[in-house]
Amino acid sequence: MTDAQLLQACRQLPHAGQLPAGARNAITDVAGLRVGHCTLAEGDLQTGVTVLLPAGDNPFLHKLPAGLAVINGFGKSAGLLQLAELGQIESPIALTNTFGVPAVVQAQIADCIAANPECGRSLSTVNALVLECNDGYLSDIQRMAVSAEHYRSAVAAASSDVAQGAVGAGRGMSCFQLKGGIGTASRLVDVAGKRYTVGALVLANMGKLADLRWGGWPAGAVAQQHVQALDEQAALGDGVDKGSIIMLLATDAPLDSRQLTRVARRAAAGLANTGSCYGHGSGDIALAFSTAYTLPADAQAAMPAVAMLHEAQLDPLFRAAADSVEQAIYNALWHAPSVVGRGDQRRWAWQDLWKDSER
Image (tube, rainbow, N blue to C red):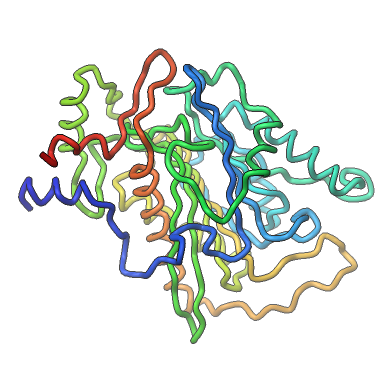
């Protein structure tokens, strides 16, 4: 590998793995899913909310099978305990900053009560699902600025077209000590004569730059040199792999919650391929769910009779999960612009690093 080859690789967006991407190369290639953002970007406030909406109007009554993998548990998300126990999601999945979790949980509960007036009375309470990363480097997290209205704005903006980079919950996030945030990708697989989609959405806020691998290339050291050429005072931290990443995986393949947990675990392979070793202070959470069927809240209703894929047929889905997470991390870096936030602290954009090298 020559320096010229490495620079050329860094100026291009890699395609993780050999599997083809879906039409959008986004989690919304899984039919029915929508993603919305609300972005707060003003001075010391660089934060927001991102929402992943399942198909249908009422996931509280029509739950989706899901599985959870806690790769490193340094996190403060809400709703994971019940998800791990019951293997279901029953609310939209919301992403925000660490101190925004309570406000978004309250918004989800209020919206569920509005749609289901007996929630918490004759019906069970809702398990609001809100996952987080700490954006305190770029945003004044102590302002606790995220509100219920920001959550609802993200819901109202939900679409099958997914904006990436420094948007929504990703606005203030740092990835490999560069500007990170929201990334998404998808992969298509053929299993037993049928084609299935696996999609990933990440909130990328982890890693140390020296470790970064870009499409398999050891890009971290040269990226550090380019950051310091742009800004001699650039903060590259204490060399510790910390932060967090939330990795959401969706598929239309018919899997049960145990199988989905196995799919979620493979998110760690995609994360590792980018160079992260999920250090002590990193909250690395993966959640996988299927849209192939729903589970009724009504205990008197018949459970769906669904033929699940055989265990021996899951390998292509495992590969797709790893590749789509890896790709989503690259996409978060690729699409995010440089951002200056709290105390004039900056995170440089990946693409800004290579502009001089193109001349």
